[in-house]
Length: 494
Image (cartoon, rainbow, N blue to C red; front, side):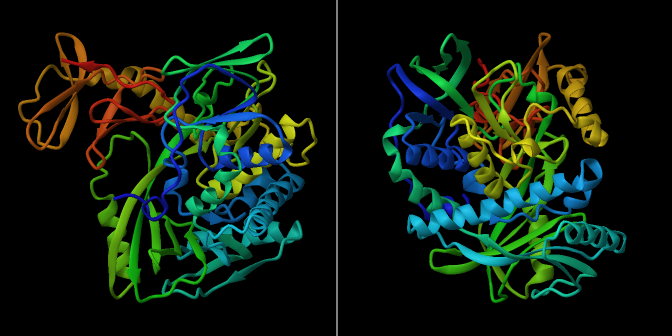
């Protein structure tokens, strides 16, 4: 089943780019970041094109829980300790201003997108986390933000403590995007894959999958995970996580937006779907491509639903990927100091609704040569991974395993016992082969090396996909690429 957003909103369809074109700015990526930036560029009268490899907002944006908030878990104590009080304050108010900017856009463009102001909470029922809540509150108080500590929620969840942000927001992201698209529909191209990006004397040259080319003076890479590796080296600074969501109907009303800081993590908010109020219950996170059993992910969420609600019905279920930065801060700004006039927005750490607006504002100011007082916070050329050694160690570990270790463990040919609806990697005549058997018994064989950097893929039985643990690329069982950073399908084998 798809997300409630994708199931309830049908966006316009746009043509594929089939001719060579030149423009001032090229935006690669048709999610909420690229769309918001396109809207702002159009208002300024700056010529641009936006290309999307699939359909507009069909990936991360279409599968979000769509909380518009500056409460990104328990983050501000970390930011003050790792950087400074001023740094934490500027991160907070960059996101607070993003909430207000989205509100202004909704109002000025009269967009009917279920935009509602609500309070947001991070809560715990773990005694070891109560002091973390207190530390977070102390930092927020110190920087002058009006947060509250509470010990009871307006929902049937037992807690020991929670921190409350007032006047945050939520909306339907697809309805919001539907309100922005008409302003620049002539600049959008769907089903247009950027295969290669090169510098030229006047800017950049983008080669697309079908042979058409784009030349531009300035370039924005607004894909969830950057599609170009060098010289930005984002594959050393990012990984991807998969998280899961249930949309359910229940008699219990959810007023507010909630996320726990415990393990396992729980996320809750209400939404309107086909005229009915539903609850979005999220959780069950795992590193994409991690060699674990994900078959019970939705069942585990249902067990949480049973503990929270007397009765419920599941209307939809979905999962999505998010790019996670090692130091917990998005990368927004210059792609690399060696690539002037090329910009990037990535690593939103599952808080893409506010981060996308922060990114659009910073990138708009970069393009128009204006100062942005928050740009330094998200400086994408920074290299602060040493501040999160655990995440760095895990990234190195997964990359080494994917590039070498796991390949050495693959056994010789044996797929006679392969269950229907399952897949695995085997070795045949010294060559690695990914084999999937469908429900009719038909076999699909692919080269199981990720077309991004060559890491070995693992088969995901829940989604019937080949997943990369190194950097999060995903492919359908037949090898068709779904999620980047890879932009190329797997080689199909006889």
